[in-house]
Length: 267
Length: 314
Image (cartoon, rainbow over all chains, first blue to last red; front, side, top):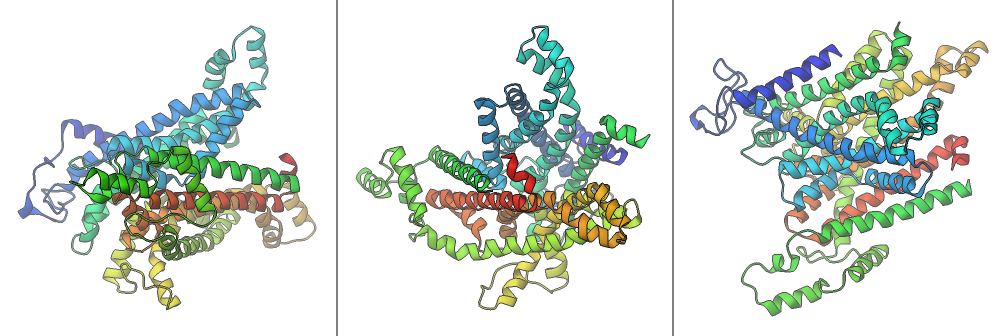
């Protein structure tokens, strides 16, 4: 978990730092200085327009993180209320409708639909967020429903009902705090999937548009250059791998740390 | 069992109907008139109107939906607006690239993941386990299109063992398989990492069960107990993941096909989207969804065959 948290923190800091400082301005081209290997001036080398890759990786981190965070946000904001509602009205028509709706979204090949959405509504970071976000909704809905159901059977919920609290009240005051840990862990995993999805969409030209830097876009630009300047493809790819790896390790670590049962098992 | 199959069939049909409505609706709200897109600028209004009539764009929405769905049921996917040939012919050419690619990748992913997961579980905490689990963490984090680029760099450019792209057709099956090898590896590796993790944790759950202890007590070696009882029982969650992976591989192929210039369904969708050839887009997407739903249905049935308890749950 320490490794995961460190990696995640490094990328978050790079993204935050890019708001106030990048080593070079990536809007200006420096063609004579193109495709430089990593050196003292350009730590990670330059791309085919002579832009500093370090600066682009920093700005790309910002794009990737922003898209993934907002996409997970859509999943959480829409999915958890739906899941809680389904759990509160378990067995009802509403529950059935919500769960079948979830199954339907799961049945769609997510990448195909994300491509379709971004292609229809013109490619942009916003549409990439929506396309990735839609597929996060059923994940959170199903998980929160599944986690909420056993809690509804507990005595303290019965006490709250006897005290006259409404289902809405109970869901927010008693159920939600009890499933928060699980949602945080899932959030980390969906975050890493969001980074991968954003990279894939911008790789095929359907994510953030130039001049916004993005890791997927950098890889697409590097594709024809791999034989003469492998670093242009290796570096953005490594950035994606380490960011996702960091988030996955963090998610695994958080799950062990937040789950009291594994704590008991360890001690 | 019959009731179980009937309920799964009903849910399969409902899913397909819902999916077709969603796809049709999404395509409907696409801005831009395909007829004027085809004819370009400066076209006479009556020509445009005639083409709209011919393409059925002036019919009511419900009628167009029904003619699309009934057409598909009889294998008539409509005529591509840009290629001017039946969509079914376009699909027929390309599915023999996409489907073998997905199956090849699934095969590779399974033969990598099974031994890896079993070795990791049976040597829990040992060097083998730690290194396999470390490798799977990387495997899950690697974007398959980047991995594809690296494979091309190493095995097609530095070492000229494979071609960097293109597909020679199935006239020479060995050559065709060879050209699908790098794409299939690129698709399979991240999935193999996931599958190996599921295999390991499912097997570990089972190895802690009483029946394994009983098997050992009646004289089976660790290896025999593992293979005869552990692995077989660990298959249930593994089957689900394999089912899910098939749809990932089919859809994930879309991007990999772009990298390796494979003439499959993925490239067809991209070309059709950019040419606003909506009839091709909706039919191919529907076909992919159909395959995914069908595979999930098959997984459900396989479940019931493996685990009799599930039949009575429904």
